[in-house]
Amino acid sequence: MTSFHGKYYYTLDQKGRIIIPAPLRDIISKKYNDSKLYITNAAFDKCLHIYPLDEWNRLEEKIRSMPKMEEAVKYFLRRVVASAMECDMDKQGRILIPYEHRQDAGISTEVVIVGQLDKIEIWDKTLWSSVTDPQKVDAKAYESVLAGYGL
Image (cartoon, rainbow, N blue to C red; front, side, top):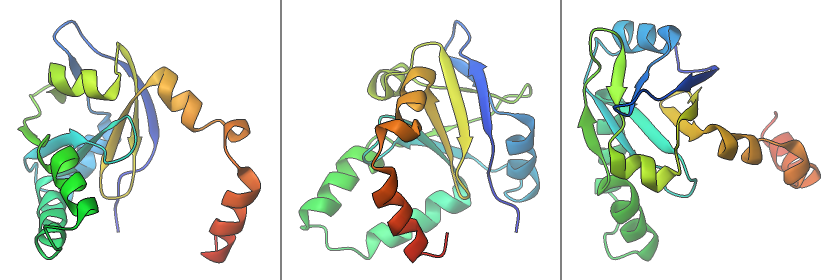
């Protein structure tokens, strides 16, 4: 099955728009029929998530079945769902990243666009480097956990 993957470096234009990389646009077009996109804050990372409508709807269905009085669910609703905005891709394959979203994610001008199977992440280039540096994580612990999943 076709999914989002890859890492792409781009620069925001003066209006706060980025170009969705061609391989990711192709998936949006073919798998999701050029559907609407939703941009939102990530729950725990300082980045943004972009979901095609079908994936956003799947996420909403999961959330609807969860107890709304659970503190973790309330946090997720407040952080992710409340920040979700529908966004359109223009004919050049660009989307506008709203100012508030850029502020929340610490995005300046240079970004990394990352395919994450069912969604796309947008990171400030400096933040991306800090969270993907093997020397800044507990590599042995991560290796052990991932080996438990067969990776």
